[in-house]
Image (cartoon, rainbow, N blue to C red; front, side, top):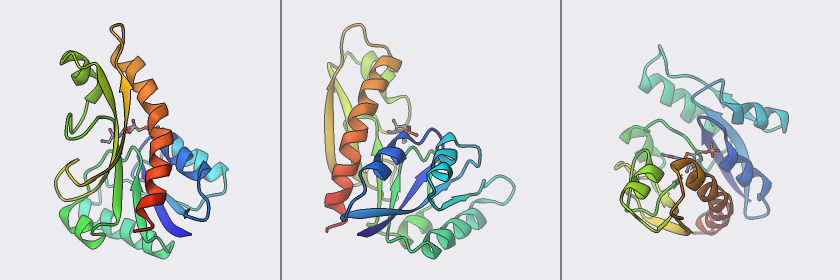
Length: 184
Ligand code: GAR
């Protein structure tokens, strides 16, 4: 199986979906977090996964990213899957892993890059939202889209109710797209 590192910052539900769907296509070799208190990290530890946690606070981004890079390589990672990782990776880091980092984003890219995607889709009167898995490049949320799932937006949806339905679609989309991607 392809060796995948998952990077998280919080809840980690997409990381859980990736772990639960791992098979001969890919295996999760390390879960790394930039927030040592991330709930997803506790889940990963409880499930016996190798983990790495380091906050960039006080050490600066270059030192933080060098340590992260070292931990991922130490774990044997060949690919990186961002799963609710809420910190921008530097151009230097992305270049080192060129074409080997993917991300899941809660919108139908190229619509709604960045934050507050569901509130923006509702405010725009969209009737369809969804999620995208894309290759990470130096430009935010702009790399090649590898797969998408659409979710209908209902007239009584709030950002929260829509986010919950899109999240279920994310959990199905991400493992499936990752399996295809690592076969490239
Ligand atoms: C997910 O909805 C993911 O698409 C989004 O954060 C959530 C993380 O949830 N990611 C981004 O907004 C990236 N900019 P999770 O921690 O439960 O996977």
